[in-house]
Image (cartoon, rainbow, N blue to C red; front, side, top):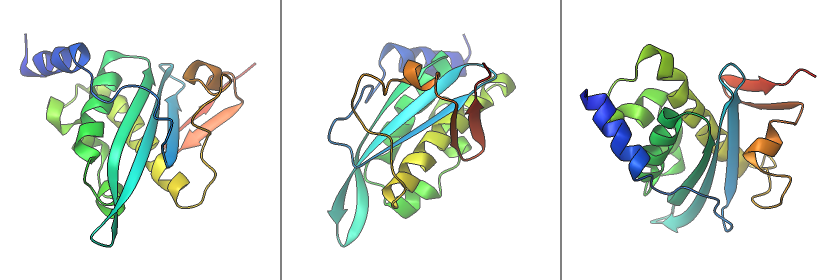
Length: 158
């Protein structure tokens, strides 16, 4: 098994920060219509030394194992980062703990980056998706006409 596959399997077997965060300050969702994957990320902030810092991050993922692994590792990476530091992170930075992603899995890192950016933008005053409610599930969002964030957007055809 390659180093990437070992790290991927470990992240899948032991995902960190998976699940909805009911006390989140912001929520971001992004999806990829080509593969059907979706990632939702919750962020909780605290004030530290006069700066807004990410205290907790969690995620849900509907889709492939690589997206779950990148989201899991990214939520760990985000703890303690200022909003500015989090905004500066690229999909490559967020997926770095796994090592270079295979070309057909690069979109997984981009989805996690998109969910993060959507959550950070929601914190700036854009209305975030509510954190709870039966109609606000990842699968339920697939039925919405459009979800967009950053470079990725979901447009479902009827």
